[in-house]
Length: 117
Image (cartoon, rainbow, N blue to C red; front, side):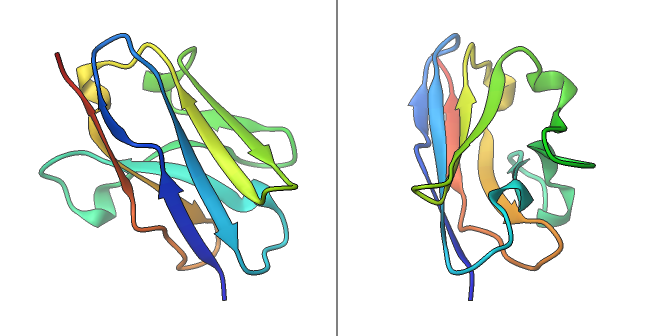
C-alpha cells in the first residue's frame, strides 16, 4: 500500500520561497509517477490543477504555465521523496498542494501554502 505525505507548506510573503516535500512509503514503480497538484480556495477536489510532474516519458517535466520559471520539480530516490521548490511566490499561488501517484487513487493529505503580506 502506497502512502504519500506532504510537508513544507506555510505562510510566506510575496516573493518568498518554500520547498514542499512528498515522502513516499510503500512500493511504486518510479518516483516519476508522483506529480504535484494544487487546489485553490473555494474550489472542489475535482478542480485540482496540475502544477508539476513527469509527463510523456522520463525527463519530460511539465510545469504549469503559471509556475514556469519559478517552480522546480526534483526527487531523491534514496529518500523516496519528491520535492517542489517554489520561488518568487505570488498571492495567486495560495492553495493546498497535494502529491498524487499517477494512474492510482493515491493522494496525500495536502499541505497548505498561503502567500500574503
